[in-house]
Length: 480
Image (tube, rainbow, N blue to C red; front, top):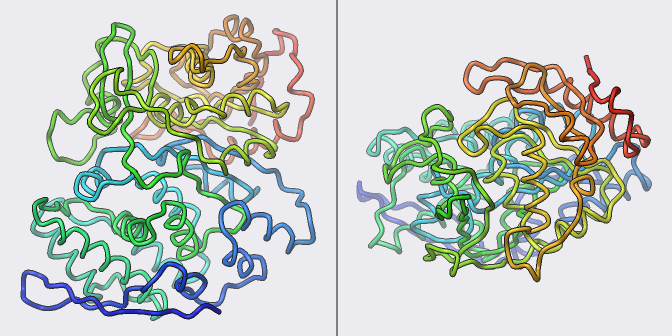
């Protein structure tokens, strides 16, 4: 076992007391020494590996292949979270691919002061996948999922209680976990104090985001931070949480509207705040309408403001590797242009997806939002196709693939508001549209019933005939 070398770093708080915690002296000496003994040989071996290697090791511990299907899901950090628990009952062999361009909420303040990629969506998915089978696992999950109060002074006061180790949130967390988590919270605190010119606002701050940011800055690696968070929260070794771009730099999302307008920043595209520092309101009815429909999304330099500042980051190689071998690809429900499409516009993603003869399933939203107002189901498919083909970017880097090369099945929540234009879907080569039981959520409207959704998805994966066009008259199916 590697030696854990530590140093002691004092930090002062407004009340004059010092905050002391053990900080790992180096990334290399830290690996493998920060959690309790894992419960299974698969997880033990997974701790010695990273990324895709962890999943391969776990499969080997089971004696080779597994009967459970493997999936890759493109999503943001909110909408798909509601079905993660149900999906875990069927398979843990899932690669969750998430964007790192979110610039709203707690993430925005971290990016503003410390820079780096946005980690909010990744943290959110890691927490949903985390273990909750023991009282300590639940305590760790509660701690990392906690948000500070909205009042700035109350938020700051509670943060100091947490970082000093005096808050009741630490109850039930054993010493090894406590020392590991608190070390990176203190490291994060040191980093924001070093930037005294930028006053950090703790309002509604996510403790998990702070822990994640501390780990990323310490390791100077987003992948290493994800690995650490995954092990601390005991995510199944076969489950991968992957940033679509593996970077330690800040990424800015831009969008071009059909009227030529350029909007900079993911939050300004989906839930504009008009410069106000407040909790992001994701109710689409609270946002003003876009002046024109979205033509495309793209990445731009941090200080950029127009198309001359477009940049072309590389896709995470592990994402491309997973795309080449999973049993099913899923485009999840949620914000189409700011949660799903940012992962699709990168070179290599469209090429790899088009080359696979497997289920490629779009989970249609139950209602419109600011980004998709007026779009029918075929419009969602077109947006995905244009993103993967990079249709409106550099013509020398674009593809000419057909929609059916990227999407060959739709799962639709029963009673949803998105029009099902069956003939247009058929012209796109999509002949399998499955209606799934839904729930009328008081906050978000019509959403998939998680159990019915996973049942429908696993049925598609097991039915190898579905990639062949069915008769149009058999286009609509119901799953009860």
